[in-house]
Length: 329
Ligand code: DGJ
Image (cartoon, rainbow, N blue to C red; front, side):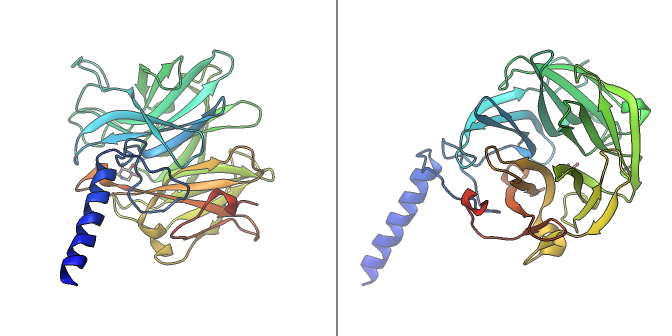
């Protein structure tokens, strides 16, 4: 009896090891908070990320993390089905040049990529902190590529219209205009600035949204209204999310409350928002994406992907241990 138990245990361990060592098991389910193996069996390393859909493929850009301080640049993964992700390598690498704004040792966070139809280029914006200066620089960084998988070329970094810029997101509206939404003034303010036609710089069309000390902005549009999910500011520790609504992208935004539901909802299930993904080919289907940060070992940070419920007056996100895309009718 005991021997049989030991043998079964050994088999289970060997199976686990085989998976860890790269035999990919096709995924067909989202399991928020779990290890998410890529097609080589390694936990996806794309934190604080965002997704671009282009020519039938989703591209997931995120922070390539090592230990606490290192920033390995921006990684990119590709997928056709949103469950199975292939590592496409580093989209933007830190530079060897000590004079570069993105020299090795800088911090690159929350990268997002959008496609510019006029220039036929892929444009990446991210939160950049200069080497050795902690979080004091508070800049936006911009990089560009003619392929979605890169390599991206660093363009410049700056504070939009002189405003500090930390946690951020990008949003492309139905008319093709693109916006950078960002935490400013020591994270006290949230602002939105329209990008130039080539998406490579910020215009002076820069609007203060509200002063509520919010981070991690993620925007989606549903039935003509703009919904903005944000987190509080507690470093890597989770806190309560909120959702605002507006008729215009520049506001005014009205606070609707905390959209999270279920165990640990008051702490966003242990996570922090990063992006809201419209699912292609389905009407009004949005996935809320968040990071469960593990500051002692950032590469082991986990992902929360959950569908946004739209069957009530206010959009909400309900915890599920497991779910599939057919959740969307
Ligand atoms: C919270 C931010 O949302 C993260 O992107 C990161 O900057 C951490 N703070 C650092 O403490």
